[in-house]
Image (cartoon, rainbow, N blue to C red; front, side, top):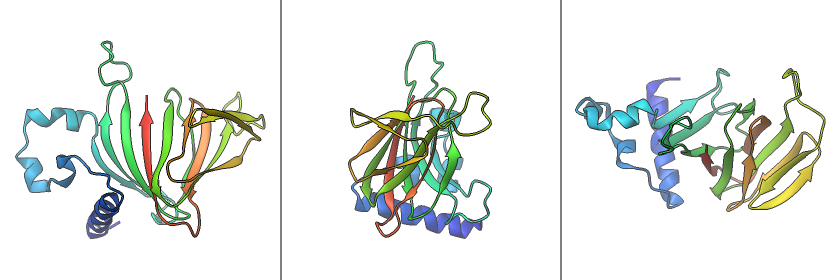
Length: 189
């Protein structure tokens, strides 16, 4: 992807965030020239990979398989003093733009629809030998309410709704067709 396309997508993201009253920290707007002037006082940003990520996840087609996100805070869960052992990200998910099936070994994450369209997640447990999806039912929490669904079920989050994904719960997600681009938050540990 060309740098000019990436820059355009980031500008569009900032406009979308602003439209939904979600403000980014100042470093989100720093130019490469401004970054060159930043010293060790900004090491936390560098060390923890804060900032913009835009990926097509190797698909070659960002608009079909991809994700644009901004990491606001990203601590170390193994930090012995427990200071900032969590992460917060804000994402833009377009209609039918897929983030492929994946899971996290140790991370628990809340995925939150913060505005815009509907977010569709499909969920299933990883099987015991980690070669595919398991057929057993999935019990999950959505805004403090426990729900059980068959493996591979679609969970649709409207604006304001969230889901908690425990470790090893496989998931894929995308914006529901015809409902608009989705502002998605993630809080994880």
